[in-house]
Length: 233
Image (cartoon, rainbow, N blue to C red; front, side, top):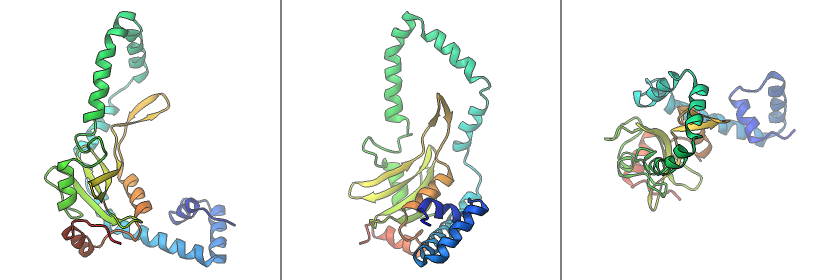
């Protein structure tokens, strides 16, 4: 039986039913390489959990929870949408509104991410300063908390963070901290927009997928900072 990476990860997380789990156990027993792969996956999971569990136990910052609480106060989205469509269907209103809509789109594109990144996808100065200087568990001057550090398969230093306007993962390169995963103001579900963000589980999953050798130990992280987060060959 061939076991995909996704099924093996689901087995390690205890997400398979008993029948599926039994199939994977048989495959692991017959394939030493698959057993080694499972051991490596469980080791990475344990290392990330050791670094991440204390952070997950902390209260959710108000900057992240308040938008969700405000969204929960909306009681009749359907009625509001219908009223908006009736208003916008009027010819004079529809065409007069186009310049305002265009301006709104520009605002979303340029400032919708709270100033954390420029148009090239790199961290802006305040976020970059936190990524450069703070160790895991510390908070930068802009309120960004550093969650953990690791190296990807190319040897680049990457850091998971949670800020006032979202959370994400950034990896260090020649031009600075490249944002490889960021939270968003909202997600689309069918024809509806709903308030959402990059949760701790999303960040942990992404870090687990990207990390070549698990999270950095404190001494390793301090050395990486001292070396300017240079890549490791």
